[in-house]
Structures are given as structure tokens and as C-alpha cells.
Length: 93
Image (tube, rainbow, N blue to C red):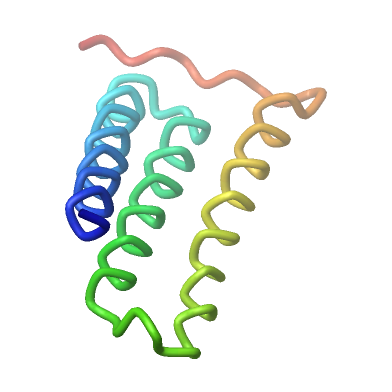
């Protein structure tokens, strides 16, 4: 059951990354690109966890990928709310 839930979470993260990538392609806003990257990092972390042995003590280092994904989310939010950031012109679809 754990493998199934891990796969479902991985698929949801991958889909969320595709969702944000679609918005990045139409707006070219770094916010959406960074969010897509962070969700794909979370999907990668789930894939690696599914492939490792559950009792392997080195698997705690895999959680650094999750920390990096959350750091990218924080970076995207800080970058979006930074004062004086010039807005990029919106591309026509």
C-alpha cells in the first residue's frame, strides 16, 4: 500500500509541475517555472524513495531533495514579492 501511495503522490507532483509549466510557457514568469521545478523535485524524491530499501539508513539523505524543493518554493515566493521587480510583458497565446 505504501508503494501505491508513493506512486500516487509522485504522479500528482509530476502533474502539478506540468500545470505550472503550462503557465510559465504562456507568461514566462519565473514564479511558475520555479514552482514547476520544485514539484518535479518532489516527484524525483518519491521515485528514489520507492527504489530504495525501506530499512536503508542512508535514505534520510534523499529527504535533502525535499528540502531543496521547499527552498525553491520559498525562493519563488520571495522573488515574486521583491519590491522593484519589473513585470515581464505577457506573451500572446
